[in-house]
Amino acid sequence: MRSLPTLWFLRHGQTEWNRDYRLQGQLDSPLTEQGIAEARRQALIMPKILAGKPAIFASPLGRARQTADIALAGADYTTDPRLMEIDAGRWQGRYRADIMAEHIEWQANGPTALDIYEAAEGGEGIVAFHDRICSFVKDLTGPTVIVAHGLLGQVLRAHVRGIELAQAGQLSNLQGIVYLLENGQETVLEVEE
Image (cartoon, rainbow, N blue to C red; front, top):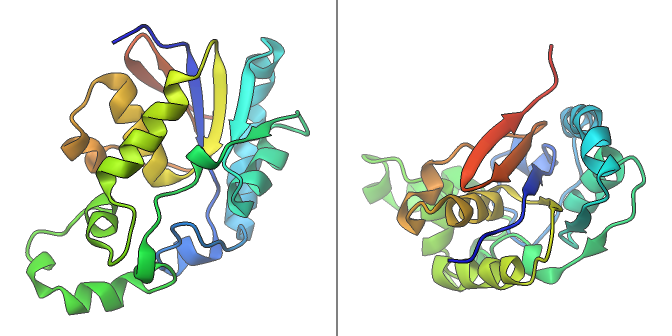
């Protein structure tokens, strides 16, 4: 695998559907007050990073753009559809509890969010999702800031770190922080409380 540039990954702040445990996928809901506060915490981390003039990309979905507008303090960014969250097909907008109730086989072993999205009726599937993310990464030519989504972040970070795709759902999925990916290693950057 070729050497990858330094990446900074920001997951969007909490949305109304995150709070309500609804699957968003490629549908959208706005940031909550907590989500706005999380984006503001990211904004405190970003000035030194942005001073280095990295490329900046964001998902075109509203929650990622809303986060980028706050966290990047008005810096210009390019949207790329390859950074959209995984498509959950007919399960988009559904409550996680309702899906779990229909799949009692999951209740014993507690699936990850990626497991649920992989099983989504009419959804994109993890392999296609991974391929889309790899296509984006392959096109990067230098240090890059990415503002996108939780499951996309897990798959992206697993890819960059050389972790098996099947283990991506076990990675943390934090909001209000910045993941630094450099030389195959991950560091969590956060505001000192």
